[in-house]
Length: 354
Image 1: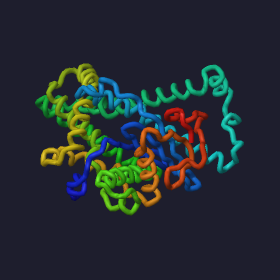
Image 2: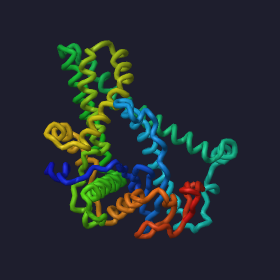
Image 3: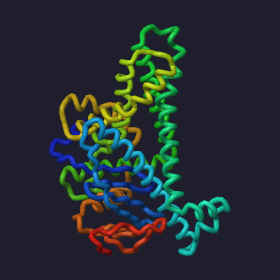
Image 4: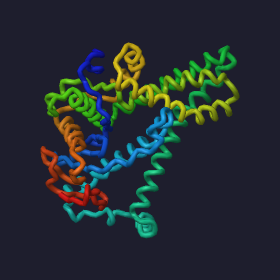
């Protein structure tokens, strides 16, 4: 791994960040977010939307990391769900025509819930349930299970520090095994290719090159500000922090780990921001575990996938007067066909329409 190709000497770090989704890429700029999806017939569907106003919590170190983690989890789930809805919509339309309807396939319970609660409320409830389930799964498997599993070693291992160290190593090993398993799934492989396309596109932009697939392809798929690195920071910091707590009863170990999750997330966020804007030997050493982890979560993209990532980035590199859009775009990111997924019209800027 050539670190000079990751911590690029002449690069100008940007606040723009992204996320790989199903057959696409989300890019979040300073004022707007763009979600670009390659639909089955090869065209690109883009939705742009205004970013919410930053709260005062986002200015407080550590606290802003917790707020950012929660926001990213909610918005990430929402964006992933939207990409799935886009693909489902176009699959249905291209397969059965524009008159295809979900309603005919809806069961009695679904129709009753829609009538009583409304589509939007049901969608929000489903989103909230997805976030809660994801959090419960992650905390249960990667936080609580390791400390409970290592408890039986207390009779054989002397010293709280060593027990906490073994717990931390087990947690990291479980996470690596989990990622390695899902990375073999075909759909996940493609998501990881789009993850690589996102990183290459950001590198291309930060180095001042024209945003073309050829230019972007010359960069690494690894990036120091990646959310994958954040997860590795979480693993390592939790190992260090939990080691300071000794080895109390199982109940207090479980409780302390849950209560310290915000602290771990906050510290990890600050380290990630530091790594993204600095280039020194300390930062490079701290970034190494996360960068090696990205070798699992990113794959080499093809030119079509880079085109989607570039389209998403270009959609946020516009002036504030540009209208928000949702639908099919051309190569210049001009809307050629408005398509509202879920019947929600994209928000307009300054009352304009395209």
